[in-house]
Image 1 (cartoon, rainbow, N blue to C red):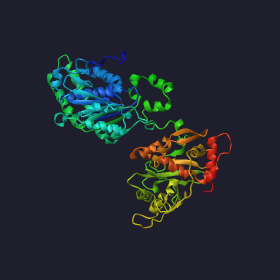
Image 2 (cartoon, helix red, strand yellow):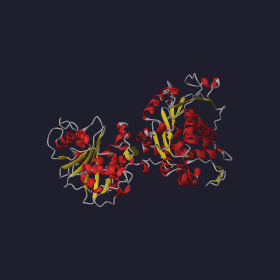
Image 3 (cartoon, rainbow, N blue to C red):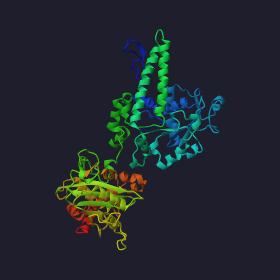
Image 4 (cartoon, one colour):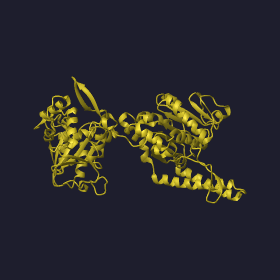
Length: 576
């Protein structure tokens, strides 16, 4: 706190009153205080000193004798970095002193342990408090530390370093004693803090699922009630410091505060609060100079947007496979409302009297994108569809049929992965299966649609050839190629897949090859639509057709192995 801030002010009533300052994050933590509190917060927002420290103090005060636990990515990080900051928060916000109010790593006084509701045999990895509460230390690199434990509240810092599976192994410790501690609104809850994860760099975002559990209207009611309670606290403080305290007035105020305490306890119980905070939430303390230093050199742009501004990051532009794909290739006004379309009749730029073109990828996820030329100079991708197992071709075809039910020209030209031709002679090929599912409904009745399979006999599309083709296609200076436009609202998964696709440089016989990193296709099924390269592959099959390859074909220069390979690919596939 700045020494220049006044500690006394004259209020509107003319009274000289003491002043206490709190950062906005501190007020938010105290006022919301729901059972579950998840904060994805930028650098310098005092996640450990304010959020975790104050929430631990709340748990200690509302659940005397309760077992608690705190977890981090590594035990070393927890002990050397996180807990010192938490202890500082205990000192600042709760007046807790090491050795007086708590001890760490050793057996506490007998009267303290007698107040604890659980038996602790080893105090090496614990903090013990005067009222019997015990805080167990745990980490992802030493899961045995929490083995067999049962706690009433779980604190999780640096959560972005925990995989979904490892986080799931920690959560079972959260069971505690409902009979003893169930009256507290913090019983059975979690407090999770971290900065913004970058899933493309191997970090994890499992805690974002809590965002869907939040009831914003309830959070507003909680804050409103906490604000009223705070005004009564101010009045009580003023009444207690008056020259002649009015005992009846003080009693009424204390009654009102107790009423709001009980009401807030009921409002907060079982509720979840999820917040994404930038470092600017704490800018009054950090100062603008701090942000300027980070922006002007301490951090590169990608890291600044992630760690300071709190924006969910994509792949660094220089690391992208589709390096030229940008805002100029996206549009968001396909529907008059700007919302996703429920059917094709809502798409303003789609011509219902002309055929559709599709790109499809077969794999552990079915990915389908639908496009249509918009005159000779523009090519629009209007919609994407996907299906995850156990749903498959029938379900994907039904999605397509339902969305384009009002489309009058019922012809679809389909470009796809050549693997879709496998087992064609046996009638078991994926492309043929999808064609049949579109042309015939689930009852075997004709739908009126005709699917023309454009990739029969297709050769392998090499990633290095794709890289150089997309440079030409997206650069926008080749008049023989149309301008690419993608509906960012109705093709959100496609846009994400393109923007998150990473490149990797390899060398084969001394020739430089730029390839697409495909590891994202091994992610959990639910993450595939937006995070995997599947949709970008469907886009590849749609775009890399013979006439466009011919238009993009580079002039032979003899000095670029990559260009030569792209030229070789174009030459082999012309006319197919």
